[in-house]
Image (cartoon, rainbow, N blue to C red):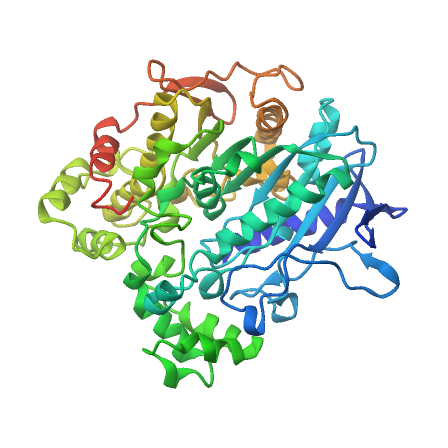
Length: 549
């Protein structure tokens, strides 16, 4: 929940920065959308929020693929789009702010916008169980795009989470009700393709981007054969498709049964082929109670019980992503943070590491030879562990923490980022890689540069931490502007090197003969070879099937 608290703080900071002015309007079919004009960082922007892109997935539509919204039903033909819509139901945030009627899209644009503007479309993270579009306010991105003379439209949306977005088990498999949250994302993109011209955007200029779970989903979209009809490029922050192991839905039968048994009135349907019928009749409060119970006291493998699946022939993920990633055709940026794995490492003793890896990436059980090799490649030596560059320091923890953090980071993030970039480069797809290595004082020292720590640099959230920054704050703000310039340049030209905005180094393309990354440190940005932990990551990727990558 710490991450949700931080993102909520971002949202509060932005709200306090807004000055409200006259309301903008957009005609959408027979309805008039009334948005909100705001000022942010010296710019005028127009916000339209909570616009439904799909029918509410309740009652008979619960646990099914989304159905496109046929029209907005409002009195007098006027729809109030001045605020974000409800978040999709999830544990950990106030119940009055969540609803199953949550499949909405938000559009943020400069007040004076040229026609056919480029637009990045953001997918939030949260481990497929938490998150909402309102936590990722795009005002800093839009303001920077205006300042550098390349104005863009920022679009975000909600998708279903947890067991409603990613049903598990044999019943979901037999009925083909799988990967619903990704299908929500595809429908949101179809809405953008159909309607964004009404807001001044170009449907042929869409760049999809996402972080963490959003990065996983963005990569899954890149694997779709018809994605070029909906987007022209992508930015993947800390989450390639197989950042999590991909299993058939039957693997998580226990998770589904735990959820069903926790929904009042449905426990008698556990283990049958008709539990979904009961769930569709339950009210939202009962479903939310099931959510809360199933996410209590999760252990290692239960951390991502409800996440995307291999869904077989004709599905969105018909095979392991490692076997599909050679099909990526759109240009993209992909990167990771220096110490991704600490966020998911327990303060563990070494003897538990084998068990955690085995439970996370099995069944079947990880072959003993592979596990032995992994332990040799990641020895119990704090000097080699994560957070990297901290020597023998263990921060008062077991040395197993740094060892597990290193294993997690490479298994989940760095190996998969490198794999998709190598596959893309070998197919002559234009791609650019980065390594984010700037620490923030707000994080404890054992976290290093953890998962999600780049987000305030992209979404302008550094201001809430200025009291912690002291003399380093100027360097952090410069880095934020530099990263935004790269991101916006790519969104407008599919190349991060348009030369506009803040002075910055050329970002080289990642190629088979030049596997290089741009490293973002707090006080400098330099090109580095993508060869860290070469032997370890090569071993992981050579055993992609074992780790369900």
